[in-house]
Structure formats: C-alpha cells, structure tokens
Length: 176
Image 1 (cartoon, helix red, strand yellow):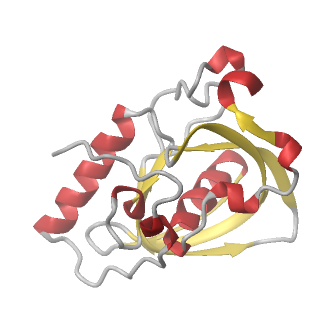
Image 2: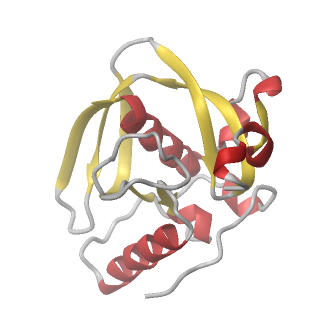
C-alpha cells in the first residue's frame, strides 16, 4: 500500500472523463483501492476518486467508521468502494450545503446537490451495489462521482459569496 499525492485543481487530469473498469478482482484493482483508502485516511478525506491520484478509472471510495475532523457534525457514511457508478435522482429537490475537496485544499463552497438519490455500480469483486440514500451520504456520492466526469465542486457553486477559505469561513476547523 502507498499514500499518493492528490492532484490539485488546475491539473488537466482532473478534467478527464474516467474510463470504466472492465476487469474485477484483480491484484491491480485491489492495490489501487488499498492505496486510495490509505491516501484518503491519511488526509482525513470523506471520499476519494481514482482521478484524484491520477488514475483515469471509474473508481470511488467513501465513508468512515469514525467522525471525520474535516466534517465533525456530519453523520457516518458506510465505507464503500463504488466502481462504474450510475446515479439517479429520485426527485427534483436540491439542497445547498458546504463542501470541501482534497483537490481544492483549504477552500469550501456552498454547493447544490440532489437530496435523495439511488446509486448503483459494482464493488472490487464485481458484485452489484445498489442503494437509495439521502442527506450527507447522497452528497458525498455525488461529489465523488463528479470527479469521474471531470467536475470539481467549484464548478457547481452558484453564489461565489459563499465560497472561500475554510480557515476564514470556519475558524474552528482550521485550514482543512
């Protein structure tokens, strides 16, 4: 396992459309996922997409079994590996909330997201995953899956008066 550097906004690799995974339960895929997990935990991430470490595949991981210091007031989300995801909104309702990103360090912005979604995909062994979720869980999935279509959360910010440095907006969180 290895901790990888996380690409930062401005790196053209973050703007690519990720390729689907076609081979499951391989040593290469298991290594990628282990590296992603170790990288995400090392930087207190709520999730991580393969493109953020320069791997152009439709692989995201998210969730935690402990409170995240970057999001201390958010509920826990089950640890999940999601490959080749498809997200379906279950209504037209969107809610705005603050988001940050490991590829946009030190900043937060108010981002609209669907409140209630269904997502599906596969795990690392190719087993089907299907869930219907709402709230923070739905937000995290949408945020991570945006990385697979070359979108970073600032591209979804509507009101730039609600975008700024974390240490200014939320001094209790520090620069995270």
